Amino acid sequence: MREPLRYYENNVVGLLNLVKVLKRHHVSKSLVLSSSCTVYRPSDAKISEDSLLEPTCPYGNTKRVQESMLQDLVESDGWTVSCLRYFNPAGAHSSGFLGEVLYPSSPLMLVPLLRQVALGQRKELKIFGDDYDAKDGTAMRDYIHIQDLADAHVAALQHLLAGEAAFHVFNLGTGFGRSVLEVLQAYQDASGCELQYKIEQRRAGDAAVAVADSKLANDLLGWYAHRGFEEIMASDWTFALHTKGNDSLYNESCFISQHLVPEPYEVGNVYRAMVKEIQKSLKAGWEHEHSFLVTSIGHYPVCH
Ligand SMILES: O=c1ccn([C@@H]2O[C@H](COP(=O)(O)OP(=O)(O)O[C@H]3O[C@H](CO)[C@H](O)[C@H](O)[C@H]3O)[C@@H](O)[C@H]2O)c(=O)[nH]1
Image (cartoon, rainbow, N blue to C red; front, side, top):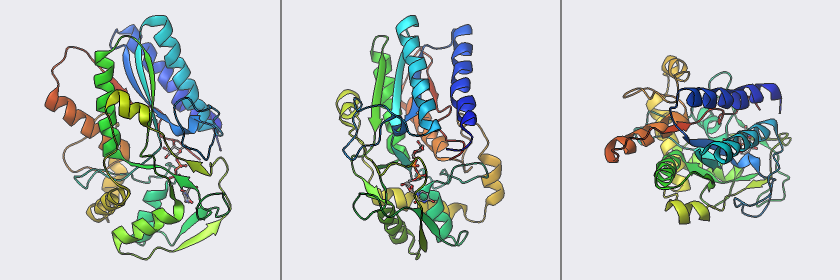
């Protein structure tokens, strides 16, 4: 909720500049945007693409503006765009070397925080509220493995290739909600470490529940999330064991562009792991004359 202008600068101005450059150089009229479930009005029911849009934080507002900007381009200039509304990406690449790193300006995301507690780098997890109207009182989210997200991007690109100029929106989640306490328990099981926690006040801007209805992506893209909740936590713990003590590597690599995934054993954030998988699929199976761009510009919240 703090520093709203940073979100606008990063997400809105960043995307505007990117699109202007693409237009000027006739590079591509096809885009996959990393959007977010935060564009929706919070709801206890599963959220589908036609649920009400009503972000409750500046980050969500900027994701909504990004989507509108691209929709206007589709209508006025024959672009083809897929907006992928991620629920809660988590987990690490199967190599064990690409995962979510908490660097100084990054938002404090739940799973990396649990990793730090398990590694003894943080005393405890602060749980933001246990008085929500949800299962055990802690907030519920739909955690999706980043490699399932990567698969969805490849499916979205294939869908763009096959179609006419159009604007598409897809939810990407598993359809299962997990509470903060359930995530903590699952991370404890994966790591074998006892994780301390403390209940704090709710965090401003947090919804009680955010769970996806991803039927549209299932039906139109033929995409399903195959990796389970336990696998998400286990992959993150594998990443923790591989990278423990390698702080200098963390710090150097996390600022490298998400689009340049270094080989083979750099660590970085969760989206670079995802882009790596997309690149692999494209190299393996695709011969095409078109140029595509997957942009994660601004997906990453710059502050909470
Ligand atoms: O220290 C913490 C951190 C998180 N949480 C809880 O854990 C859950 C998950 O929190 P995250 O910060 O990991 O994720 P968010 O649900 O806030 O994040 C989602 O919304 C963001 C925008 O606000 C981005 O879109 C992001 O990619 C997406 O995962 C929330 O219920 C949150 O309240 C805690 O209890 N303690």
